[in-house]
Image (cartoon, rainbow, N blue to C red; front, side):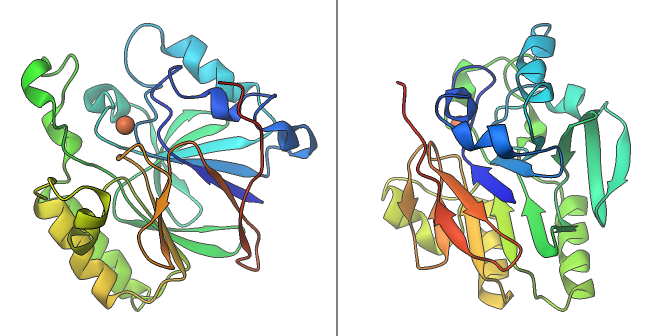
Length: 237
Ligand SMILES: [Fe+2]
């Protein structure tokens, strides 16, 4: 089984995955996956071990794409490995960062990933301490994304991003201006044959279309037949 949820921000928003709120984990194994769609925040500073152990000791393997609140210099210093058809950074035996512009095959589902977003509060942040210019993808990463989509004939099952495609931004907040990444995601959305798209970043749980869903505290389950359901857990907050 695959579960997908929104931003966790280190230990600030990881309660949705604890034993109380996500009790089904008792029946899961390391062959099940929980994917966080960015702002994972467990590769950040000297307190990372504790935040990573929260996931190391759970009955699932944790995967995440990057958001904007990640320590990119530290994240990219982890070993790059081939993981289920794409490239990932191995954070531990059961935590992997899914790199940008990859197509993974997880539980027989083709999953395209393109993390990154811009921090609206960057002016209050310190470069390379609490803000990193790599928060938005490079030209090379876009190129890799388009090359990999071409290899898969622009057909995948699931899309995972942190940011939303440009056309859908007004549905989230009419004040959001949008950037190059939003526009590229728009281009991809128009060309790509996909079944469902999940994104984070905006700290809301809303649908942008019948296929595009913004996640924050909601957890979605997806089986190998692409049955998608909202997991009815608990909320202890
Ligand atoms: Fe966030």
